[in-house]
Length: 283
Image (tube, rainbow, N blue to C red):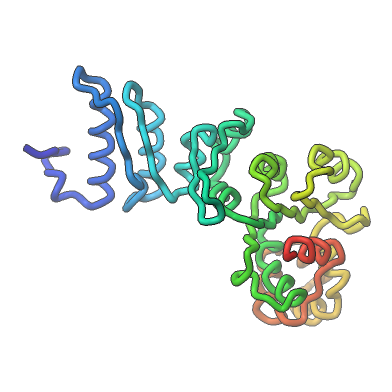
């Protein structure tokens, strides 16, 4: 006997479809009188496209009856299937890591949010969270210029998570006591957007949140330009028409950061608040 779909036997299907059909078949047994007590799914994401993986996650979430044990290396699957029920295994710890005490609202947030860096956070000993692509691109040269060490060879992981998600990530970092630094923008009001917004974490020994204290330096690009003005003017002057170099960088954040990385990496200077973060996280 064999499983067939639309007349095609399972052994003649692609590997991804085989995984999906076998998983769907195992879970569907829960609707019969012969339902299994336990279903083990090992890395169900193997060979699946992003769309098929989302369908598989829905299939798993919709199943009932049997107890499900899923092993995975996928951020998408681990977040979508309820972080409160997740068990993480890491070389950083000789004990399994549980998130059963995580605020259920935060767990639900990660199940609905865009693809997250949840595994990178949970499995890191030190992590540096940044707001966007420009910061992510330039952190590597800034870190190396200050410490003399390639960040990829350090124990510091960098993740771009978006400013609106910082507090969700910090809740997990606080719960697991992971050394975590945040580089963010003051958006013109340091007191409201930094001091008051992150007051719940101000006394946490392993959490550091920094932004430029000058309200005029509302974003990373402005702070960065002010300490790298000659480099930026030289590199982007021929791209400017009616606007200034800084306006060009603000309108083309990721591209400007990429060109700085390609052409001026060894010369870049970090703003003071980023120097403080790098010194702290690299200790």
